[in-house]
Image (cartoon, rainbow, N blue to C red; front, side):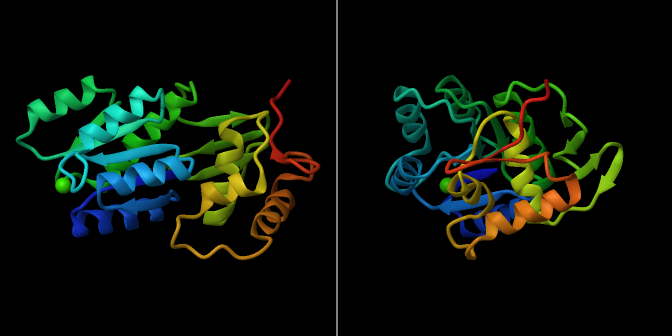
Length: 220
Ligand code: CA
């Protein structure tokens, strides 16, 4: 899953990006409201983490513009403790959740998972597709009841595919889910990880759609 973090405080931004990457998210980080709008116009994100007090364009303005355009991306506001009125305005302007600084990174990751669940229309915290069970919180995966050990990248790729069974994702879309801007993408990496996943989950769990991409079929 790919997130955009908008935060002008270097220390907070750095620790959030690092913490969320360790949790398996691809994270792009920008430091002002204009850069946020540029990133949102050019990339596809699964969720937006938005500070409100920002240079160049306030977070609330970024949010209002986004919702005005009909963009339904889940938005979590990151605000200061004393800014109750700001949080209320943020939620009323279309934010889905907020966290008060300083916050715990585990709580942030859990709230992100909750928002992503809701976006996918799931109430269950564990994703089940056919013989596969995937727990986004613990990153445990079982197939036919047997534990499957996956690398962080394999897990990120599989998460993207099982989040929307039946949807075909191109190689480029899968790369976007796996890597932030400043992370090196090797050549043929998606193919390599698909190959690794097929060795562990069998050849048929992930389908090739020739010339389009990959999908995990909806169980019939
Ligand atoms: Ca700020």
